[in-house]
Length: 169
Image 1 (cartoon, one colour):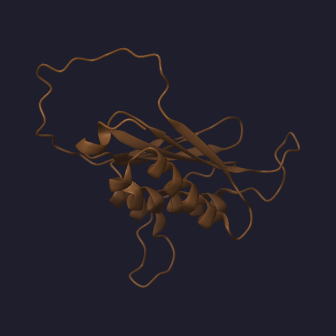
Image 2 (image 1 turned 90 degrees about the horizontal axis):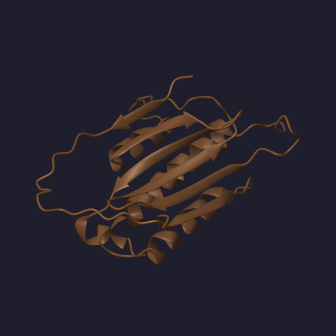
């Protein structure tokens, strides 16, 4: 199965001369939320993302993070949710997870479908096919990979501004 990664090329004016790295055993901050299957799923995903971003003191990227999470969840619920139970009999589920890295925020949405996401340019007046172009425009990079026997994880990485990158959650 094909894995696909989309990344923007960024040039950096920050030098790394004299930088020291530390080995730490602490895990990066992580938060996950099971997405409901009702009509409030996008509201819940936006609220969860906004609350986590505020708790981690990442307010400068809150609006973009909420939009990215919302678009990925909308795609998962619309295109990736199975209508039948999984082979083990459990109901299909969609998860939204956020993790903070030293210079970025990673948003991952898991859904039980192995159908790969497609970046399709929308028609000028179309109301659909806008989710992944929005994710691509707001993120530093995005991609997907199969996850388990059934399912996939679609992710997007959002760069943190230097001031936010140095803050502790």
